[in-house]
Length: 131
Image 1 (spheres, one colour):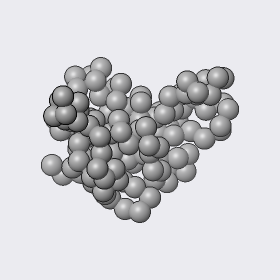
Image 2 (image 1 turned 90 degrees about the vertical axis):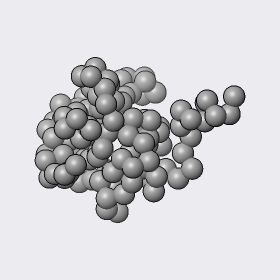
Image 3 (image 1 turned 180 degrees about the vertical axis):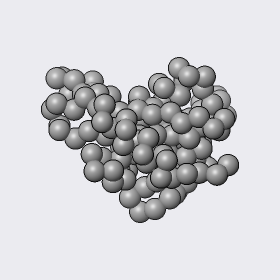
Image 4 (image 1 turned 120 degrees about the vertical axis):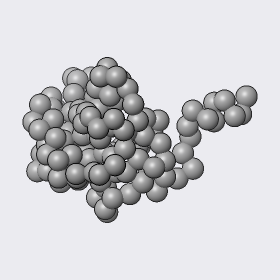
């Protein structure tokens, strides 16, 4: 599948413009290419209690599932200036769950697979293979 990184970054930037970040003042947007060709997006949504804030990738996964599911092929996450951002640890786990080891991430150090980003990842197979 051909990946148009500029299109993904633009979709992530558009999603970022809808972020709700009144506390951190750090809006984040993310876009993912799904194996059926769709592009799904998400933005961060903060909360006054801080701990229940939702990262942009949470919105992305919710969008993925609510629009029919599928597997993420490629993901771009950006800040307010359109610069690539590295997802936090929790979000790396979400991307692994819905993209797997071959999903590509536009990271701060170039395009990398999730296997490179999250080596020795814990996944659904660990829950079944180790019973």
